[in-house]
Image (cartoon, rainbow, N blue to C red; front, side):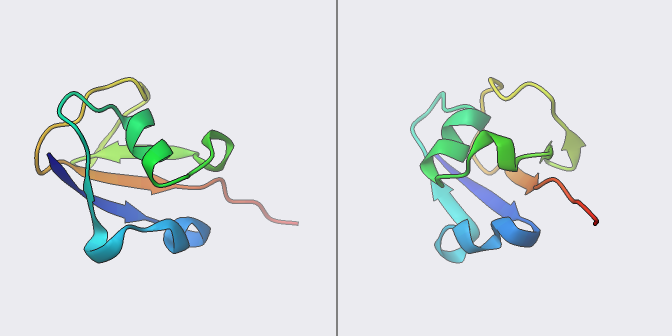
Length: 75
């Protein structure tokens, strides 16, 4: 299956080509993050199709849009 990906801020450098990621059927949010080599501690907010998702074990579906936001800090 293919999903659309939006990685925000410092994570943009890990975006797949054309912002499309190919994954096997049944892949989860964690599987997608691993495929893009995004460390779990770099993930603050995950949205699927504009809905916040806390369960990283949630299965993805064809044409889902995954948006990932890293933690934001100020000093």
